[in-house]
Length: 326
Image (cartoon, rainbow, N blue to C red):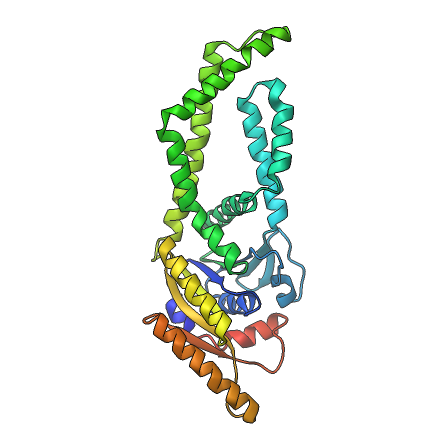
């Protein structure tokens, strides 16, 4: 059963194609684990935020008690990116001459819509939540955004770590920064200001290096956390249809290349065989897709969950769905 593959892990990611039931499965897993006496932090990183709808109550960015042993929170990607950029802008201003602060503000206003900005901000927030969550809870479960958003986020620690290593290893980067500071001196004289003494430039250089090293340490910690198979696991959620199966196979490949372990494939909304000819035919068609899935991903556990006669909404419905997991 699904919990057998997850019971010893402390960080769980539930991901997959949009609309396949990631929030339902992650909430049910949280409920089932809480029944064993574990405390669970359930985190939604999906911009659609179905977590509050599923539990039938507002959640937001604070910590909300959803059920005994289960705390929930929702991460707003837009607000997270704004907070991240404000912090970075303040840091940059701290190492730049004051007369360039307005240019820094203009740059970060443009950066809000730049590719990768939201992913970098979300990575930092997810890292903070995971670190704090492991101190206060037994298990941290992430109900993630649809596949594309999630793979970009999980690829980022390795990519950004390599990028920061490049910054630190190439002396030319520091030399270019020093040249840029020197280039500001004639303007400073024209405006009646004294150019920064060399010691001030060296101090800024050292601070920039410390900032880069701190970011590098963050990316390495997150990468180590994600790739620790004893600590972290990923559950791919899908339905037994051609496109979700193809997307799940591709997701499995990307996750394993990143270094994450896929603990199980959770097939949601499986059609019954005893409810008429139409559903029986659909069940048979689904069986063909699952046979293809198992052939392409041999050795990865496949767990099936039935199509229910109503929506999973509210704590009682989540508890009933959790009965299918143990």
